[in-house]
Image (cartoon, rainbow, N blue to C red):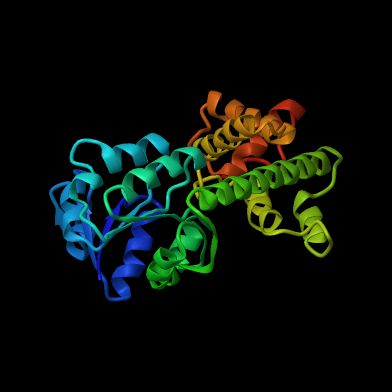
Length: 295
């Protein structure tokens, strides 16, 4: 299959590579940032419109709602190259409300649209073990499923357009609040004089265990905050949660407080750290680090 792929970032590049390995031709738009490896592996087209014209399926994974809108409907965007019968798959994490509008505009051109955000981070992207949560029609999902299976493991059609993004927002709430809880627990334990590494080891055997305690707890102790998934992006996702909650009339009090902790990290220059770096805001308030800085 000829697949257009827009967004060769930390997540997108390995995802596109897995599709290439599965035997598909990958077509990407010209960018000055394209490295030699990508130019050798993928077919390069002039812009997103040219990508869409040449491809049967167009996949996007870019940072935020305005980026998706620009990639789809801006000058030289995907929409300009679409013809009836093509499939657009947005694997970014963006607004569920905007997603429904984007889907309607693409559907009006005679094309199918799936919102299919992912969870699993850089590790999941590299290992092709991403969780993929999908919104859209069943026929479009069936068409895309072999592509999803090349990039992920846990693949679920949740409901109509927007449902995938709603699920991703829910995922990001759980992840953020669990990071915050692990951070609080380790700051508390360390301040009390306990060895945080041994506390984490003990907790891993009980009900408090989680992948976040395993992976991000270790980052907090070893002070390895290289992303991963950046704080600035997780803050964006919690902003989406709070905006959507306001539209629905739903209170998300702990999401709001955790979003403020991410904002504090960004204000102090930590926006590019891995989201486990949220612990730094808690350490500042406690005047006590979980562990000494590495090196």
